[in-house]
Image (cartoon, rainbow, N blue to C red; front, side):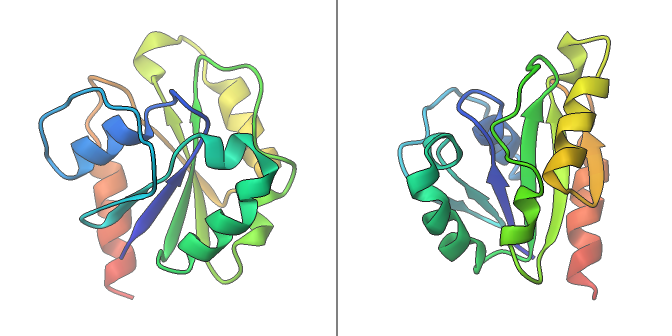
Length: 142
């Protein structure tokens, strides 16, 4: 199953993509939609600019799971309330990143809940991402 990652610039979508694909971690600014294995990495500008929402919806057709990515360091959200509802018939999950840099993920979790996600998974630099990998694989079996 394909997972599409959506989130503002700098929340860690590309790093998460590299980790999920077991690639060498290197910073690179995502300039366009990147299909990398079973992950679709989207530029942050696609959520930061409402004019690109339609593009997210079109690209989302290729994914079975939509991952809304929120950094635990951010106290504001780029996701409007119930944003997940624009992805019809898709499983929409929340992914809190950079949990190793914050002692509290309540704000990030709350912002993702307002956006309408069904489940939230927390990820950090030193945290294993097996839960997310299993989640994606589990969707493959259905």
